[in-house]
Structures are given as structure tokens and as C-alpha cells.
Image 1 (cartoon, one colour):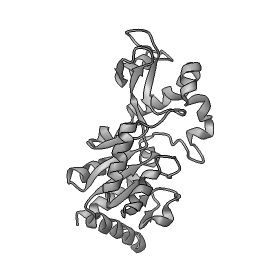
Image 2 (cartoon, rainbow, N blue to C red):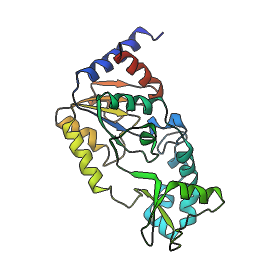
Image 3 (tube, rainbow, N blue to C red):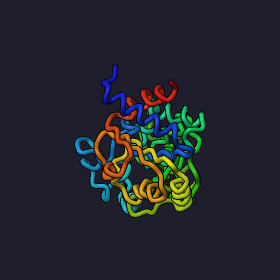
Length: 255
């Protein structure tokens, strides 16, 4: 049984959600790490502790050193392709189906929100699960790239023009997709509760979305394993694993 002080946190979280009319969710890497997706910025095992992002995850790296780029990206793609949503993703779907959550804005590129069944997802940094040819711009589904990688091809090529296939993610040296960005800003303006899940809120400009919601009068609830730069501004912070927290929260909402 949960300790009384922890149970109080769960109740306060449920009360915030019950009182809100337009809840927007903002997710980061922490919601997907229980599914086996590596964190980019984790202090102990984050990808950027092992790689220089400008050397492997930039537009320049893709076009000038594609072997180095795909040595980094290939295992990330394979993990994302094979991974499954966890309890946090699934509970967000349940809350969306009940009309509690209006949209999910995510920094993640793993596609787990959609795989779980979320319908209203805005991917600020694109998706690792689809590709476009760098020459002819043909759109290519992830399954084709998965098959190429599984067959031992270290770099995926277009079957139409033999151009290198580029993942539909936002790389360093690239801007965010403007249509998605504007939609995210609109959602932030509408929110009366911004629910941040699994984000350290360190990445700019994505972290300005919760800030925009606050400026428009929204309440803020943060569920992240570690502290964030916006904890002091939040109405409630719960520092625990998202996949463990959300089943408890949804159970409390159903009482």
C-alpha cells in the first residue's frame, strides 16, 4: 500500500485532472525509457554521454559522413521499431478516449504514442519510423528500412533512385516543422492544465511550450524521475517513474 504522503500526491494529481477542462500532455524521453528506448540526455547512460551529437546526429553528419550517422542511428531505429508502449502510454490513450486529454505534444521520435493508440499527437522532433529519399524525396515506410538493416545493409537506399534514405526526424542544424510547431502553440494556448511527463525541460525551443501554457493561465503538473527547470513553477511535481505513476493515477480517477 502506498505511503500516506504519496497517496496524497496521487489524490492531488487526480484533483487537478478532474478540475481541468482542456488538458494537454507534453512528453519527453522519460516516458519511453521503461520501454527500452535510450535517453538522450541522461547523466549516466544518455546517448549524448557516448556520442557528440553534432558529429553523429546533425544534417552535416547525414550528408557528409553517412556511415558515422547510421552507426549511431541504426540501433536507435531498430530499438524504436521493435519496442512496445508501456503503461504510461496506454493510460494516456485511455484518458484520451474518455475525453480527459485533448492532445499529446511529444519530443520523442519513437512513435510509441501512436503505437499505443493515441490519435492527437504532435511530434515536435519528427519520427524515426518513416524515411524520405535524400534525392528524389520519395516517402519510405519504416518497415522497408527495417528489412534493409535486418539484411545487413548498414545504410538504407532508395529503391527508385539509389539515394540515401533520411529519417524523418529533426536533426541538429535543422529547424522544427513549422506546421506542427504552430499547432503545438495553439494547444498550449488552449490548455488549462499542462501535464509534463518524462521531460527534463532542457531542450529549446520545445521547452517553451509549457512556459507558453503558464503565461496563458494554465496550471502545470510535472511527472519526471528527476527535478526539472520548471519545478518551482509547477502546481504539483511527482518525481517517480512514469510507467509506475500513471496506473496509480488512473485508478484514483476511477474511484
